[in-house]
Image 1: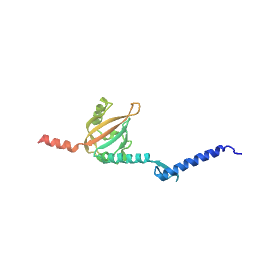
Image 2 (image 1 turned 180 degrees about the vertical axis):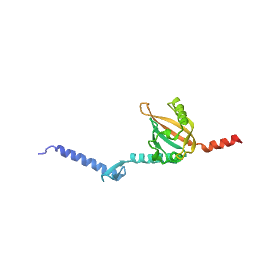
Image 3 (image 1 turned 90 degrees about the vertical axis):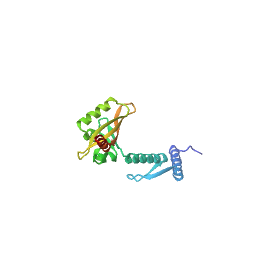
Image 4 (image 1 turned 45 degrees about the vertical axis):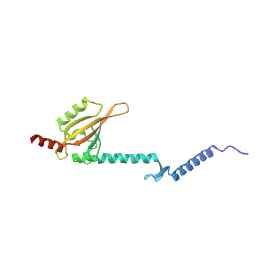
Length: 179
């Protein structure tokens, strides 16, 4: 007498089939596995995840290699990201700047100018020539190109700023004008 397989046997057969498919994918190179450092269990990684890691590494290299400073601030003007160039420009370590208010690096008049410039145009990129203060107190002439960051509903959630040090250029222009 042939009885229908018990439900637990069907589930076991399905799991065995899935395990065999996973082993075949690992052996063929379609997916990779790494060991999770906390649980010491294997974690399967797809080629898409590998491509994502490579893309993230490429973008990180670009952000860190640029000669301009990059700053991301939230809607409350608190810094959530800076690249190494901006931190160097202002005399800080990048991690020290996280959570600081962007106005920390500006005089009151520079801050008012920035607010007025960017308030006029809440959407789209705008630029501003201003002065930032180095940690040691030195004034740094900069050009900031800022773009608002918005969520999926179009609400402003922050700003991305590209900061270019124009101190030397301004000095040269002043010398030329004197000449």
